[in-house]
Every structure is written in C-alpha cells, then in structure tokens.
Amino acid sequence: MKSLATFPAITSNNAAQPKLALIAEGGGQRGIFTAGVLDAWLEEGYDPFDMFIGTSAGSQNLTSYLARQKGYAKRLIRGLSRQKRFFRLGRGLMGKHIVDLDWYFDKTTEANRAIDFATAKQSLGERELLITATNSRDRAPYFLSPTGDSHQWRELLKASSALPFLYKQGVKLTPWLNAQAANEPDAPDEKSQELNVQPQADFYLDGGLAAPLPVREAYNRGARKIVVIRTVDAHFQAQSAWIHKLRSLVCVSGYCPKTIDYLVQHEQAYQDELAFIANPPADVEIVQIFADEKLQSKLLGSTDSDLRHDHKAGVAAGKMYLQQQSALENNELNEIDQADVTTSAKSEYRDAESEYREAEYHLGAKQIAAQQSATDQRLSA
Image 1 (cartoon, helix red, strand yellow):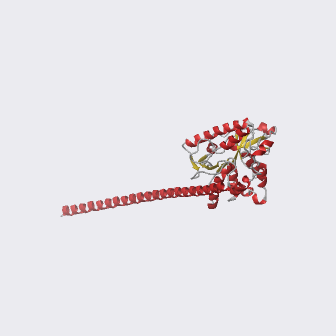
Image 2 (cartoon, rainbow, N blue to C red; image 1 turned 90 degrees about the vertical axis):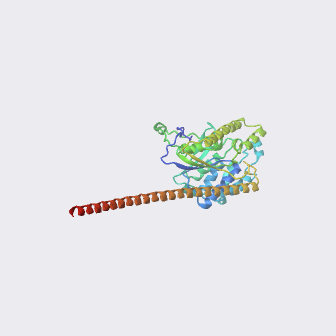
Image 3 (cartoon, helix red, strand yellow; image 1 turned 60 degrees about the vertical axis):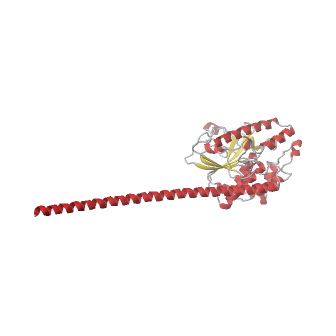
C-alpha cells in the first residue's frame, strides 16, 4: 500500500475485529453490471460492509452506492459515456485526450447529474472507502480515501479512471491530498513536521494498472470476508477485460511504448491477485459475483442494448446473492435452533435421569427400612 507520503505499507492485519469488505472491479462501460448488482442491493437496503475498495469505474459505482442514488451509475454510463464528446479516437492524433474525463466529471456537477457526496459521506460514517490510483512516477498502487469534500472526491474518481494513452499523463493530485486523505495509518515523523514537509504532487492514473483486483489489500487491512463484484465472465482468467481493447488501440497508433509497460505491469498485478483468490489464507472467505451469462458490453463503444442487457444481468446477480445470503442465514439459524433443541433435550434427559435415580434411591431406602422393621418385629416376638 502506498500513500502520497512515503510511509511504510500495510503488510499485515492489525484490525481488532474481522471486517466485511466489498470490492468493485473496473472495466469501463462493463461497470454497468456492477451498477446493476448495487442497484438490487439498494432496492433492498442491503449494506452490511465495513470496507469498500473501488478501482476505476468500480470507484464511481461504490460512490453512487454510498450516495444511495439507485440508477445513477446506469444513467451516466448509458448517457454520458456513449457520447462522442466523451470518447473519440481521432482526438489522440491531435494531441488531445481520447477519453475526455474532464468533460465527463464536469457534467457530474450539473443539477440533474450531481453525485450526492454529502449523503455518501454520511452513509459511509466511520467505515473505509478506498479509491485506487496508480502513481505515474513510481507506478505503485495508492489507496486513497476521500475527505468528504466534493471537489477532492471527484478528483480521486477521475484519477482512478484515467487510463494511460486514453487520458494522457493522468490527474495531478495536489498536496491537499495529505496522508490522512490517503488513509495512511502512520503519522508523519517529528522531523517532517518540523520541516513542514508536504506530500509530493504527482500525476495519478487508473488504479487498475497496479491494483486491478485489490483483494490482498482488503485482507491486509483486516477483511476476513471479501465480496468481489467482477466485470468479466466466470471462466475468464487470462487477462482483464479492458486490456484487449487498449492494447489494440495502442498498437494501431504505433504510439507510446510506455503504455505497453503499464499493460505488462497490469497483467502481472492481475495474475497475482487471481493467484491469491485461487489460494487464499485459511482465515478468509472470498465470494466473487459474476454474471450468469456472457456480458455484452465492452470497455468503450458499447451499444445501448448491450448496456441494458448487462445492467439487467447485474440486477439478477445482485438478487441472487441476497437470496443465497438469506438462505445461509436461515441455515445458520436452523442450526442454532437445532443446537438449542438438542441442548434442551439433553438437559431434560439429565434432569429426568437424576429424578429417576433419586426416586430409585428413596424406594430402595424404604424397602430396606421395611425389611429392617419386619426383622425387628420377629426378634421381639
């Protein structure tokens, strides 16, 4: 784990209580599947989580989930992300952003598209929300916490979604994003405080480059049940969904070899997380939520019908998860009830056995007394 200040990473679980974490994978427009899952949960008022970690589109989905804005993410993905103003490959030839995140997030300040950051902050409370981003200087993953300020929160979301090549050098996060905002557990040392050392302002890129599936980070922060909403098919284990599209765009342009390095780094990080999920520590439960059928949307350029299909698939998956959780809880309650019945039965049996033995003892004593009385009478005669 990294923050804007150069302090030690979290490498072990220091939490007093095990946590329940929710991780939302990125995937561009495929994030509409995640939006569907979360919309199903909002419909039922389901939010038992202690920790949230979002990557790229996943961080936007988690924010709207915490804001309790059911249908918000679906509306933006089907609306803003399909407009030519947002995505135009030809702009790259003119030295401009192929994906115009500035325009996109400016739109989220308009009244009819505004994210309710105040509600998101209130519903988050004392829980953790971590937005992943990749530092363009050291290429390390950073897990950043919003302070509640709408501008700062929006900038974190933009940085987490800034794919290299598509959004040039990334988003510059200024020194006001301090160690606290970065969720850094260690305080600055006294020397740094005396010298008034400020965190370095760097450019940050899509969190999926260095932390595509931050399951290990959740575990290291104390999560012992981790729910991961995936934006790929269940059988898909080779590469993350958006890598094919981005690699083809880069190769066609013959531009930006540094981007290829990012893709290689991403693939390694992705494989490492899949290996952790496949062989997790014994004290953690990892639940992955996939679509029942193949998702039809893409990183970019999806049709509206594809997006509607995948949102419905997400809603179905979200409802199925709730049904499974309800069934598990009912089974646990039944087991507890059975255990109570068994314990009660055993107790009643022990009480009855004790009463029987006591009665048997008194009966035996009476018999002995009667025999002794008869003997005494015979002797006296």
